[in-house]
Image (cartoon, rainbow, N blue to C red; front, side, top):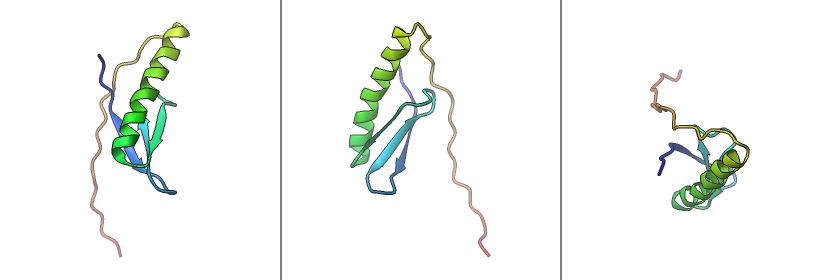
Length: 74
C-alpha cells in the first residue's frame, strides 16, 4: 500500500477536481469532495499501472505544505 497526497480544488463549472502532486498528469474530478477523492483513487491506480507497464519506477509521495497567507487589501 502507498499513500499519496491529493489537492482538491473547486471546479468553475461546479463540483471538484483533484490533482496528485507526486504524479504529474494524474487528475480526476467529481460532483462532491468524496466522489472526487474516490475517483482519483482509481486514477492513481491506473497511473501507477501505466508507469509499471512502461518500466518506470513508482514515485514516492513528496512533501507538500499548504498554508493560508493573510494579506491586507487596500
